[in-house]
Image 1 (cartoon, rainbow over the protein chains, first blue to last red):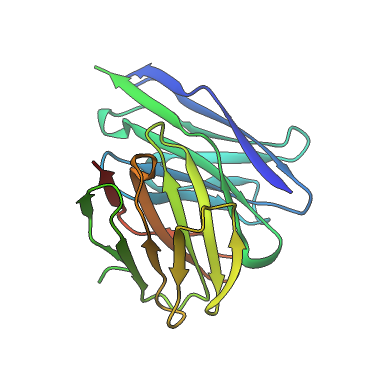
Image 2: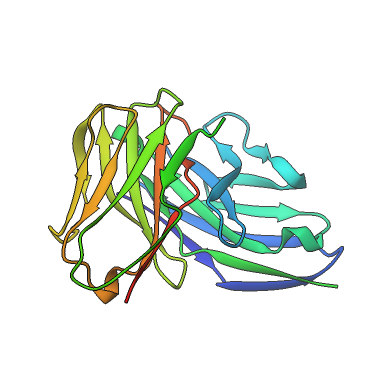
Length: 113
Length: 111
């Protein structure tokens, strides 16, 4: 069985500050891990994914995430927040047959000027 | 060239009506899904099809019936709509060991 837990339903940072969105996973098989972003009234767009290659994964828009097996974590970071980063962020895990994707409850990122 | 497209984007209907949402993907993926996103943004998987066969049915009321005429299409039919069915419904597809690709969503409002 697989699941993800996102700590913090709302995160607020100032423009230019570090963004850190937390995700912990549980998986009975080697996981594939993903971060998605959802802008208002839009679908989900992939930011980055971990598929058992490099543990530090770089994605679009300056985001990156590090897979830490010992901590069962896959936290999303960005060194400097932009106003355009304000959105809902979802962590997801997949593994096993048929690529079933389990999503976390989402973290809404607010960026203050 | 839209990868996963679903129609309609908005759907407003009265309680008790029957409605359908259509989804098509042009990515050549074998697996397609329907997800429901509630007002708190929680994404819950409803169904998953692999090569036209139902793989996952996550305790969804039988008023919801998915249909996959071919592996590029997965439609969702809902009978006797209820107020609690109001949500955003997302179609998605995935290939073997790829990420899920999502459509733009269908906002269903039942009045």
